[in-house]
Every structure is written in C-alpha cells, then in structure tokens.
Amino acid sequence: MSQLLSKSLVLSTLVLIFLTTSCGLYAQGSSSLKTIKIANDQRNYRLFIPSTYSADNAYPLILNFHGTNAHPDTQVELSEFETLAEIERFIVVSPLALFKRKTDGPITWNVNLKKGPDDVLFIRQLIETLKQQFSIDATQIFATGFSGGARMSSRLACDLSLTIAAIGPVAGIRYPKDCKPSRGVPTITFHGEKDRVNHYALRSDSPVYWQMGVEDALAGWVNNNQCQSITQTQHSPSVEFIQYRNCKSNADIDFYRSTEAGHTWPGSPMAEKLSEYGLGKTEENLPASHLIWQFFKRHPLPK
Image (cartoon, rainbow, N blue to C red; front, side, top):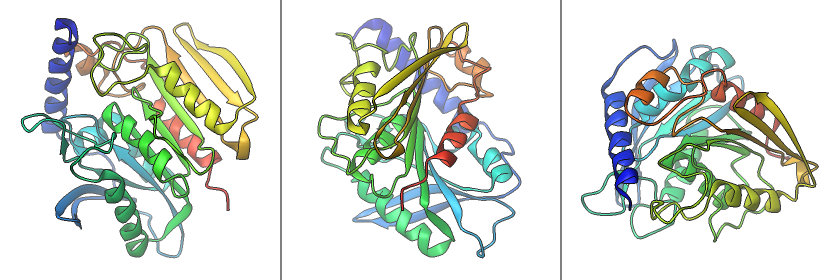
C-alpha cells in the first residue's frame, strides 16, 4: 500500500473518530441504542422512530451503514437521515459493525463473508425483529451506507434481494464476484473521481478489500438488472448524472459521478471537517440523502 493511501486511511480514521465523539440534536423523534443476540455475538444498532409513528400505518425502513472504524452516530450526523426520517415519516436503523480483518484492525463490515461475524445473518434477523416490534412496510426496506457501509449495502443486495427493495451506496459501490441476486435491484450511487480511499479506478495501491473499480462494479449491476439504455446529463459543472433505464422489473440505476469529489458524502453538513481531515471535496449542492430517499420511494419491492 502506498504512503499516500496509508496517509489517507489514517486521516479517514481520525475524522471518523472526531465525528463519532461529536454530539448534537439530529431530529425530534426517538433515537436509542439497542442490542440483539446473533449467534454468539451481542450486536448493537441505533434505532430512530419518527415522532408521528403510529402502529396503524406501515412505515418504510432504511438501513444506514457506517464506514470502516466509524459508529452509527457518525453515520447519522454524516447523512442526516434521521432528520429526513422525521419529516418524511420513515424508520432508520443504523447498525454497528463488529468484524475486523486483523486482530488489531478497525471494525468494518464482513462484506467478503470471511470467518467472523455473519453480517448478512445479523441484518436478516434484525429486520425480522424490527418487523415484529414495529409496523414496517415489507415492500419498502432499503439499504444505504458510506464507504465500508456502501460495500455492505451492496452485499445485502446480493444476498437479501428478496427483502431489500433498493440500495444507495455512497463512495463504495461493489458487485462481489459471488453476487447472485434473485432479481434486479434498483440502485442509486455516488462516487468522486478524486476519492483517495476507495479509488474510482482500481490501482496497484488500492486497499486489499477494494477489488474492483467503480465502473466495473456498476457494470455488474447494469448487467444483473438487464438495463437496455443509458442517458448522460450534466447535473452541475463537476457532476455528471448517468441513468440506466429499460431495466428488468423497473430496476433502474442512477449514478452521480463527480470529477472533483473525494471520499465524502454529497450534501453532508460535515463537508468542511471532511476537507480539513484530508478526505477531499464534498459536492455540497448535491443532496445525496434526499436523492436516495426519493429514489427509494419510487422503487418498492415488487409484490
């Protein structure tokens, strides 16, 4: 791994630790840290219920995955999904990772299904538990996440495609070589060409977990979804909006590609801090969380 990449990963860890220790009011609903037993592991997750929740209505559920060495609180502040959930009336669950690639390494998601915590099992059982406790619309269960969390949302689209209606990976889309979805999975994704952590194009000094570039991962989903047409428009001077349409079962793909963005979440209020810690530019006028939610609403699970 190159000195540049090592420095970038160190900076990424520092900023995520900083964000984890920051505090603030995210929304007016109820947020709490919960625990569930999965196999021999105690797994934690942050749960947000909007203040208008009523068991008489069925609510969408968004799984919001944090990045490597981060925390659910980090992801909540980075994405502001709980604030949006209070307005739009959906439930947000932000799970906590447990897997470590090395004994002394950072926590991350077991995307490559190595020996260790089974994160697919964790999420499968977590969803079932939440469905027993709350009124959840089974056709509107979605997954999003940042960096390592983006890779995890991609994994769930492979292994839980009959449960996860659509995904929204940010700065980390993957199409694992063993990915075998049972259907086309609608996907909205964002990536910057100046991402120094999860490189846009695979390089010799890319991290060991980063096994394919963004375009190769995207091509995997386009092929899986059997999309027949592509439209490219300029969203802004530095952002191109690429739409894949005429896909099987309405499994559209939206891709926002920035020529200037680094390893960041578009539209995040943490843009300045992310820049200070060396993660690059944030496309501040590209509201990723809002775009993801609007895309999710248009793509429920087929009945």
